[in-house]
Image (tube, rainbow, N blue to C red; front, side):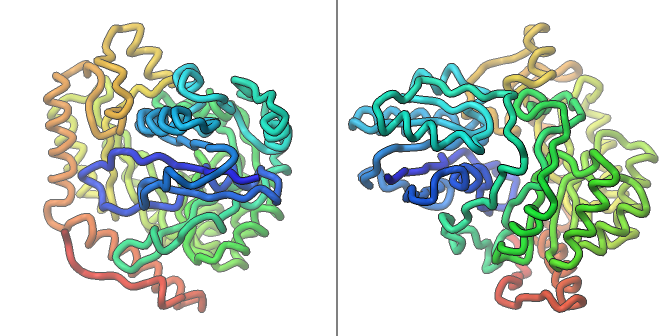
Length: 415
């Protein structure tokens, strides 16, 4: 049996450096398929799909809301030409009714331990319109190593540098952040994978640099310590979302190869200032993730925030516009208040205002979003700041003997 697996393209944010990371969703899904299933994978963000390639089944994997329109467009084409299409992925779960109306089948939920039965249904002509396993979570011990062999790794190089590979050590999140759909998708319970399986997968990844895409590593202190102790002998260099603000844990993270973290910066408090300083004291870089457009922000507060970010010397900053994605607490609030402007999903990129802010007009918030990118990177462009982070990781790799010269070319120029 052969499956044509497609990851649809989406509009890139003009303010971000134009690189692509190898996606995790499709390769994690591929690992749930029987080993005798042949997979032909296309990531439309780096290459065109061969629409004429033969397969028994077409699977479309969508992570982002703004991928949904293109995914549906592809599904329409394949079905028009007599092909059977199944949708899956995070965005498919958020837009279940819409994708179900454009496909032969939609899979909702986590696929471990379930795809063999789905494929049996397909082979026997009884494919269901919907397979709904939302919040019916499989044992995390069933999560196997992602099937990264389907990726065309050279397509993910950026200026001669191989981008990080994505991996996850847990699912679910006990937090309930207002812009996040994880409680709907993965539940409010922290669900760690067995650490021996995590270590086995990471040891088998032919890349020295990784990105842990877990919602937060700071959900269980003992697990976090055990994870970092498990990682240390592997000598990988990695990025993650927040780490617990604890000296013992941060020391272990640094010893385990933590390169830099994505840290939400939500105000100009001393807490944030000290949080960033603490990371840096352990040699861990920081990329601030900053949401613009919350109800307490006006133009002046955004300007003060940018000044603060420069003052605390973030290594990088990523600005996004607050975006009310389906099944998030913020969407429920904005829907109740009649403040959502439209549901044109391809514009839900987090780089465009799609709601009515509380303290400024939509146009003014869009203007302040552009201001934030321009002002923060006024003295040093994004590419140069990225290059500095890569120089730091090269130093770490040379110090512990894990440096791979072919992966580490940097070019000191800006676009």
